[in-house]
Image (tube, rainbow, N blue to C red; front, top):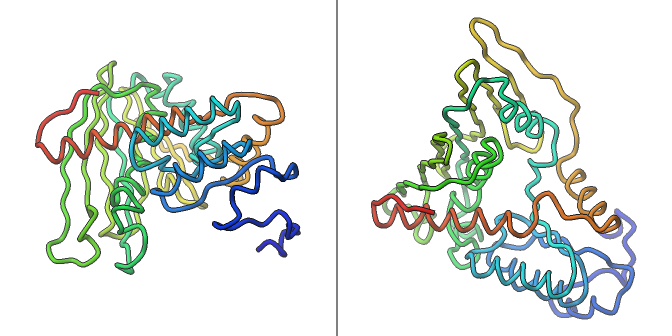
Length: 291
């Protein structure tokens, strides 16, 4: 991969020599694409080395780890951004604009579903220590984050249930299915699901009093579709297509070069992980969790 993109051998690092990156002025930003449970350690070490950090989502396994990453960025005076790629692509950005503009009438409810049938039981996504959880941490976070950015609000209450197929070796440590509900201050409700057990799914619906905005697929890497249903009409939206990863990396580069705050800073990741832990708490105790 390094040869393919012309990366010099002196700019290639591994687990053994990672900390020596502090002595390399040619490296400005580190992109952390490790299993979730390793994000905090390698982000903090990267920040301590004086580098800006772009960390994959979910930000970390626990809110305390997220806060540790945020504190390290502030102490080092470096940028910390969480790689929520959907926030940087055209369809989701337009969905945010429409949902918040009032074009659909006041939003009443948001519906979101993400899922796929996961395979090899030995993969890191099914290891609690490395993944932090199951489908909720990996793909349910898309539905959670979408509910927040489409409503433009932060939820105040969480309800949730989990289920995993008994005796399935894939789900010895992490959950298979999750359904959760969010209540927002304005009265908007969000009904969300995620699963490691069914056919590939990625959609959301924003239900307004006058119209409905639909995206299906909503979070795939390509082929996104958006339309608005109003009365007996369906308006398909045709937008320019961008590379999600290139767009978020361009944004990170701009933030570093122009000394701007990222659209999705560490605090954004902390919000989601705090809410995910509320989802797990609600499912575990069978009660509404106020957040």
